[in-house]
View 1 (spheres, helix red, strand yellow):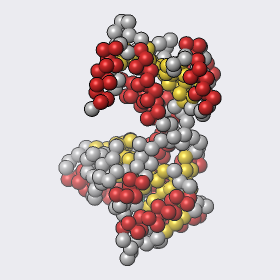
View 2 (cartoon, rainbow, N blue to C red):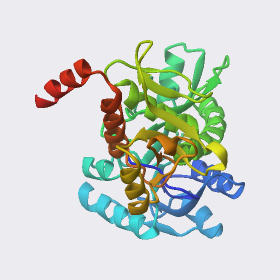
View 3 (tube, rainbow, N blue to C red):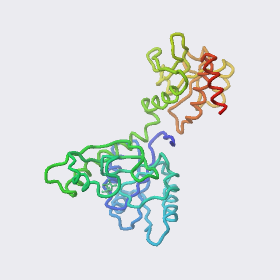
View 4 (cartoon, rainbow, N blue to C red):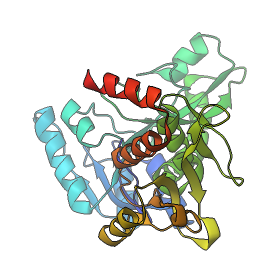
Length: 323
Ligand code: GRF
């Protein structure tokens, strides 16, 4: 998955209709949400949301898809999005199915809102289907866009009670109100995840615990990872802005002071000397930075793990690596 950036994330919103979700995102951005809308684009030059965006001083782009091949139209939309400097794309009632190429180009950076509690009722007419099924609760979901229609990871949901006498129209109206709360909140959290210690620890934990016989155990009050068992040694520490540092980081073992000094000198944007720990050769690897390289983090976790793991484990690992 692509990595988040720092500062306010730049968003392009794609619409085909009235654009009320786009408006919710725009007004949230003006109330301090961690993103800004840099473009509103549409496949329908008459989409109501375009004039709203224009009135609000947001750059717009429109190109009718009529008479165009899907790939050709997507490429033109993509060019406009890139020109705007957008880092993320928010689909908000964009009624065109996107080509696989377009979806793959924005993998991990394209979100959509769908008016059902996914995975229920993907595709068309979700309100009518919820009513027909006799559901008590409907709602909306924000999800990552993948090549499977409405099938990407669900990032957040809002539930809306179904009332006696609801029609698809009355239900849709209430679900919209919930959508307008949900989308800015989920998008804001998603673009900020790179400076969210819970998100960073979650990813780190997944990588660390995938190593053989690794277990988590707090050390000096912070999450840390060690080889299982009483005498098992620590191979990684999670440091959330320790001792006034700006970094949210993982600490890993280097081969010693020379390597530590070399790393910090060569790449100070990534490596730093962690308070206290540096004395015993630990290096800090910053996680809350734009485009954190998780392959590099994994590499260091493995190295650090190898430096403390018993031979029987490293041997098994070597054998596994040969396959
Ligand atoms: C919303 O219901 C959204 O969930 C769906 O399309 C509709 C767009 O409405 N994907 P609007 O244009 O934002 O008012």
